[in-house]
Length: 312
Image 1 (spheres, rainbow, N blue to C red):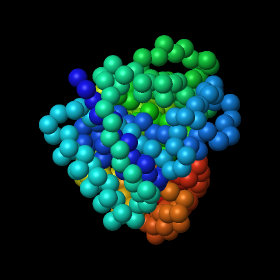
Image 2: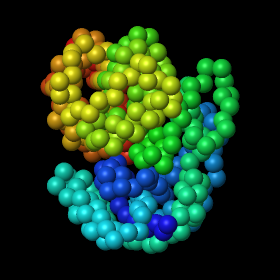
Image 3: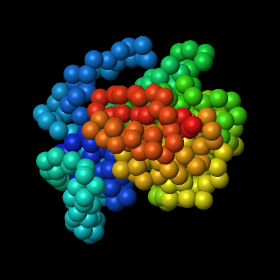
C-alpha cells in the first residue's frame, strides 16, 4: 500500500487543533517538527537527552505531519483538511503560513520512519512515557511508567501541555480521589491519575475515536478497573463531588465550561487546565476567578500555560 504524507507549516498555537483535524480525517498519528527543540536548554534531571538533527526541522514555524492512505478519496480528504484548518481562524487561532504539501511514501518507509521521533521520555519526578515497542526498565523504584502507542493517534504524551498536566496531577492527586478528565484524547491523564492512586476516574471525550483510543491505552496500562471512559460533551450530565477536574483543551473551550467545572468540583477541590497559550492566560484566569476559583499555581513551558485553581 502507498501512503500520502500531508505536511502543514503552521504555528505552535495551532498544533493541537490541527492534530485533531488530521486524526478525524483518518490519520493514524502525527509527527511534530518544532525548531525550538533544537535550541531549548534541556535539564537532564528527568532522564536522557537525545541528539536532534537540524535537517528534520523547519527554518521557521512548526510542521505537523500525518499519513493518509492513497485512495480515490484522498483529494477530497485533503481539501476537507485544508478547509477545517482555515476555519480555525474563526476561533482566533493563529495558523501562520498554513502551507500544505503532499508527498507519497511507501508503506515500509512510513511504518518505521516516524518511530525515530519517539523514545522513552521522563517528564516528571515520577513519570516516564514509553512507546509500546520499547523494552524499558525503570531506573528508580518509585518510577511510574505510562505506555502509549502514538500510532493510535493523539501524539506521544510529551507535548508541553500534557507534561504540565501530569506534573500538576503528580502534586495534587491523593489516594482515593475522584478525578474527571475532560477531553481525554489518548487517556494519558486518566492513566496518570490512576497510577497516582485515584480510585474513581471518568475519562470524557466527545470524539468517538478518542473514546476508543483512550479505552485501549487505559487497558494497555492496566488502569481500567478504576477508570470509566465515556462519550460526553465536556461536563454535561456529570455528577458533582469531584476532587479534581483536569482538562488539556484549547483556551476557548476552557472558557466555555469553567462555570460547569466549579459546579462539579467539591469545595477545596482542584481544577487543572492546560492547552492555554501565553496570550490567553489572563482571559482564562479571569474566567476561573469569576466562576469561584482561587488561582493556586501557574505553570509555563515554552509558549504554553497550565493553571491549577482551587474551588472556594
